[in-house]
Length: 178
Image (cartoon, rainbow, N blue to C red; front, top):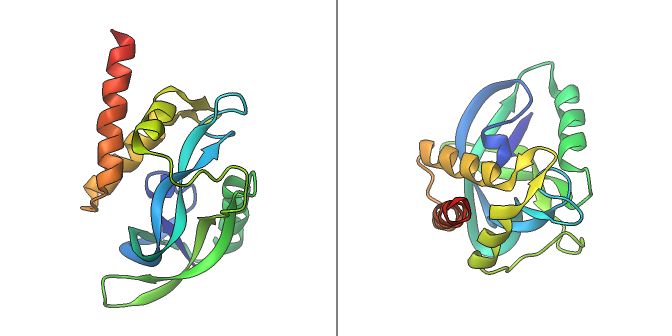
């Protein structure tokens, strides 16, 4: 069983991983298009989390995570509890390109564009302002952004929007501390 990690699953999968491989998912792009009212925000002050938003011609680079043999059922139950907490994500199976040498089918959580937590198309500055201030059950929204951007960089995966957001949110945070 394979799982596609493009956000927090990159740095906090929460399940036993037997193998990791940089992978590409075609037809989707990573964006802060989901309001977080549980993990990185609240009902009163929603944060933003990454989701895969369908887009013709797009490609999202992330990690294909192979679940350790024997842990598949437990992993799927865990992922459903974690990712489907508000039904804003849809559980799908998607083909991942492992660098042209192989393709695997992976459990992949994508945004439901009809869900009320969907907020695709927010300007980057608005995203930065939200992320800089939101805190939820799993901690500050900034931590989620910084960890994801750092792990993408470690993997050699460029994401200009996340890099810009990380720099802008740091600047906003620095100003609020002054």
